[in-house]
Structure formats: C-alpha cells, structure tokens
Image (cartoon, rainbow, N blue to C red):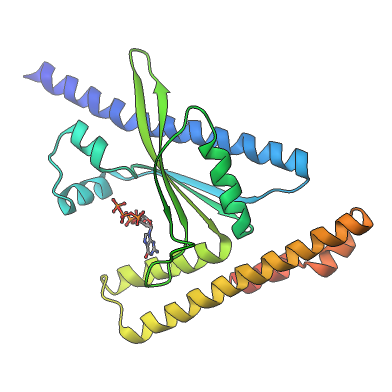
Length: 234
Ligand code: 0O2
C-alpha cells in the first residue's frame, strides 16, 4: 500500500512537472521569435509575456465544476489550461503575426483557436486564444502537453484584468450598470487599439519615405510613456 501511494505521488509530481517543462519550451520559442524579430525588423512586437502553471486549488475547482473523474488521464484531457501563457502585444496586427509564427512551428500542434477579437464575447472580452500541444521529452517517455496561449494587446489586457476583478468581486453576478460601463470601456479599448495601430502605420510610412527617424522625432510623434500612462489610467 505504501509503495503504491509512493508511486502515485511520484506520478503526480511528474504530471505537474510536464506542464512546467511545456511552459519552458514555449517561453523559449517566444523568446527566440522576439529576439529574431527585433534583430530583423528593429521592432519588438511583444510587450511582455506571463506564464503560470495553474494552482492545485484552481485545478481541483475546475475538476469539480466540470465534473471530471479524479484520474490523471481525465484531468489531462479535459483541463487544457493547466499550463498557460499570456502574450501582450503592442498592436492587434502583432497578435496575428505572433500567433502565425507559433502555429508554423513544426513541433506545435494547434488543437483549438478561438478568435475573440473578430468575435468578441457579449461582455466585450477580446483576445486570441490558442490551445496547442507540444511534445516534452522526459527520461522514459514523450508527453504531448496542452498549453493555453492567450494573445492580446495592452488595452485588451487592461480591460480583461479589470473585468476579471469585478467578476469575482461581485461573485460572477455583475450589476447591470457596471456591465454597461464595462461594455463602453471595451469599445473605448477597441477604438484605442485602432488609433494606436493607425499612428504606428503612419510612422512606418514616414520612415519608409524619409529613412529612419531619430529617437527624438519618434518620441515627439509617438510618446510611448505618455500613451502608456493614459492606457494604464495612472
Ligand atoms: P482563469 O481564472 O483566468 O483561469 P475552459 O473553461 O477554459 O475549459 P472556455 O471558458 O470555453 O473553456 O475557454 P475560453 O473561452 O477560451 O476562456 C479561457 C480563459 O480565457 C479564461 O480562463 C479566462 O482567463 C479568459 N477569459 C475568457 N472569457 C473571459 C471574460 O469574459 N473575461 C475575462 N476577464 N477573461 C476571460 P478561466 O479558467 O475561465 O479563468
């Protein structure tokens, strides 16, 4: 009995480790893409990347909510966001670029793609979601591990974080007035993304006509720190 329990414990530890390794693999891929892109195009499409392995408490909550049998294969097949990565991009166009670059990688299999940018959720949520599978080479086996990748702009992320806090503060039952305000804020965020992309496009066109802008000229036309303060509402 003790040996059995010990084996089960070891299996569970390896089970969770596989997700940690999967995140390391995908993070390395993102890092390489980011560095290469910066080098080739003198521009970084990724603002920042966050990754996490879902906490055991959250996994258990989802098991109960989805009524999943308490076995490792069932959990593995049914909870596909145990390893999660969130990529924040500067512009909407970059979201699709990054997504495509990841999708094109030979060892990545795209299992599901949800485009909440083209089709936002009724509450205004926007983001591109990928569920991918990536092989992890362990000492005695190769495991195909699911990873959820959420790709969004800073404005989309700002909105989603606020909505997430409100959703839990009101125990998932947001008052109608706040719902309407959130919907308005989502439209403003969409508009901001559009405007930022258009300014960015204009700068690119100027650059192409006149050669590279000096840092000073670029800061004049596109005051990143100031714009970020506005977006972050500081
Ligand atoms: P948490 O606490 O962020 O992990 P699933 O429940 O994942 O099996 P679902 O709901 O169809 O299936 O997946 P979907 O729509 O791709 O959403 C997955 C994740 O996207 C959510 O994870 C959230 O992180 C985020 N998300 C989706 N909709 C919303 C939304 O309306 N508002 C906010 N703020 N985030 C959203 P979890 O597990 O639900 O939550």
